[in-house]
Length: 277
Image 1 (cartoon, rainbow, N blue to C red):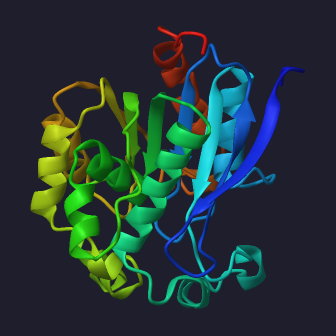
Image 2 (image 1 turned 90 degrees about the horizontal axis):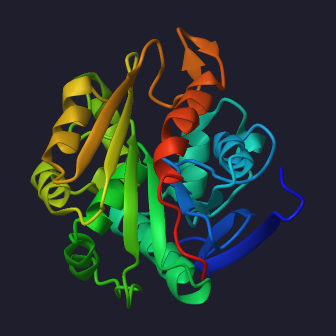
């Protein structure tokens, strides 16, 4: 880590529970690009040791890439207190939250990063549902989703999106995972047609996608389909033996998938660093 690196923590307006969207990260220099990390459904993203997004944030910061994590609003944030009881965590933290509410949180964070923090150019990196949120946003479909839900659009000026990175984001879940559609947020997902339209219309200047060959949530075809529809697609990278969450290789815990993705992306992210602001 560089001595000049600044650790920041902010809060944007949320839609649900504690009404807070947490924004944390490392800022090295305004002359380098900013990557925004977004977790998947029911996920947690912070700078704590062991948190996947905290690990990613430090890996990016070590490459002199500015990075911010977004954690959406929920009723409780003490995920560790639930141990392996995932179902109880989901209901205690998210019962009653819809997809539109979750999307509002992300839009609110992007608005805060652009308007309040002054970043006009971003790289957006989303995992699973996080990637779908970013597609809906960059594809312009978010306005319709929020309007239908009676939620005010928090974005007054959309930042320039230098790059969109999708990790394990597909347009159709595996049939055997059907019961998960009854969980909060997932029970009100946008239709496949809207996801496909968003992919076609994304305004991201470059799009990259990662897929774990042992992804248990989406098929390769479901993820590839979204990627191929984007007008500025660059590369679709398959990581062999890696799971949907990019936490294991052939079933064994490992941060190697995170390292591999950062090593691939850094040369593209830093190829044309943004101007000094």
